[in-house]
Amino acid sequence: MCGIAGYWGDRRIADDRAAAALACLRHRGPDGCGEFRHERGGRHVLLLHTRLSIIDLDERSAQPMRYGNHVLAFNGELYNYLELRRNMQAEGVVFGTDSDTEVLLRSLARCGVDSADVLPVLDGMEGMWAFAMYDMQHGTLALCRDRFGEKPLFLYRCDHGVYFASEVKALFALLGRRLPVNRTKILRYLVNGYKSIYKSTDTFFEGVEELPNACWLRLDEACSPVRYWTPRIEPDEAMTYEEAVSGARAHLLKAVELRLRSDVPLAFCMSGGVDSNALISIARREFGYRVHGFTVVNSDGRYNEWESVARSVRELGLEHTPVPVGGHDFLGRLTRMVGEHDAPVCTISYFAHHLLMEQLAAAGFKVSISGTGADELFSGYYDHYLMYLAAVHGTPQYGQALDDWSTHVLPVVMNPLYRNPRLFVDSPAMRDHVFADACEAESRMAVPFHEAFAEENFHGELLRNRMMNELFREVVPAILREDDHNAMAFSVENRSPFLDRALLEFCLRIPTRHLMRNGYNKAVLRDAVRGIAPDCVLDARRKVGFNGSLAEFLDLGDESVRRSLLADSPVFSLVDRKAFGDMLGSGRLSGNDSKFLFGVLSTKFFLEEFGTDV
Image 1: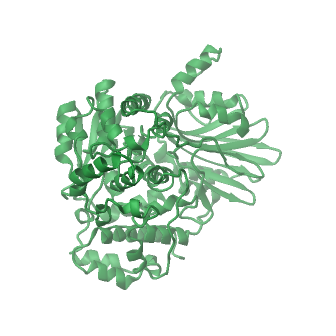
Image 2: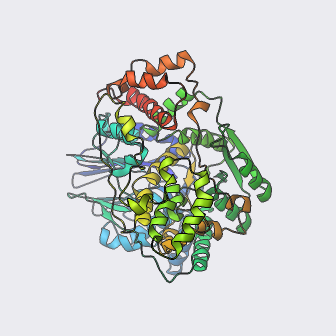
Image 3: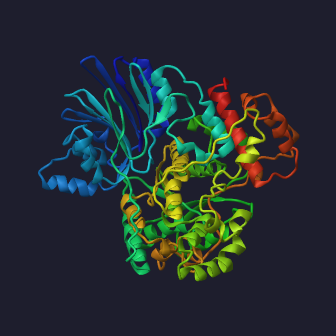
């Protein structure tokens, strides 16, 4: 895991700008840095790299790495590098390092930077990455991002070239100036929430974009990204439930095994839920890994999972560190986080996650493992069950599924919208729940803003299409951004085993009728780790999630706090200050109020740091 930045164009980037960009990325790679320059036919190329040593810690694996006429700056991990290395050695290739970087470089050097040649090579790789690959002979540069978009890569195109970087601040350092904030993006975040952020490739700055996931971009006159992987939903209706469970188990074990590869210690983000416990239990019981878990501990009963966590720790024999959420400088830390993210922070959950990453790094760990993506692969949300009811409506399964929902799910559902079992049977196009707080947020804005909900058509079936939109356009991209920026702020690499190509493609073959069972969501996942993970976790029905309450961080009864929140700020050119003040003075905040308050605070600090002209 590292930081990269660079430039391709007709200008030479000044040395001081390159040095400034490296300084901006130092936290992403405190173990070393490197620079490569080349000019051919009036076209200049600059590659920068800061290194966080995870595999082959020797200096020989420093970057940018060169082999022949090819140079690579790579951020991420190639998890199946050992298998690829053995295959190449069998063909006579002699390696000079033990790194995954050299395996990636040698593999790419065989085909060059033309997309038609490189796509089959990328098809055989499992990992997370953002990299720049330069061909010195032809003077061409290509950029690439992993299938799920785990590793960030920001771009700025102008008339003289293309700038790119792992973080926006490094891109600005190369450019020599900041770009204006993107007013529309800010309004979208404030009104529609974090699930709207990745509906497009633009960012919180005008002209800055993200290279889309699963794309290869050769920098030439066209500069058009080419998609090298598109997952297909092709349920195998002949697959039995037992086959679904055994297949998911095999693929998940392999995904975890690959992501345990590291030459430095790794730790686990641990909640009381199925996702993290599945990964931890596999690592502990299947691979004998000495697991250390880190858990955010809430006093708010809505989010407190301590009893379940404690039982898992005892049963699995884990090392464990609880991380209390209270007693922190909330406003000061949030200000710091906005500067680290170069953007408003998505939700308060990631304030808690920031605390966890700090403690994980302080304990000496350089890699964290999280359960991101399990809900979207295996159907983990309450509205998923309602969509499942719509999918099996009219089949013999419906009656039992409805009884199971009434008995086991309805008693723990708090959202009134989700208490109607016919919600998607009667209204399959209903999506009001995705931007549920938008109307209330719109009423508190000083600038009118409304943007209708839209989703991509991945598949004709409602549930499977929703899960794919959440995975690639709404929930997971935002989570990955926060996971990456929070972890890298403390020089920690984050890994997500559920975001595994083979595992996803298998899950997309599972018939929809198997996704729920006996009133349980994520039924296939639960049974896939049955006998590995503790039954107390697998049998729990209440979904809590990795979260926190704003009341644990901020005392709104303190008049000085209220005054600071209402003080002059550029955010009040977008948000109605009176409406915001009325909300603060209304007494106890609702859940929607708390989300809006967090969004306003996050935007306030972003605008005060990065621009006031909105």
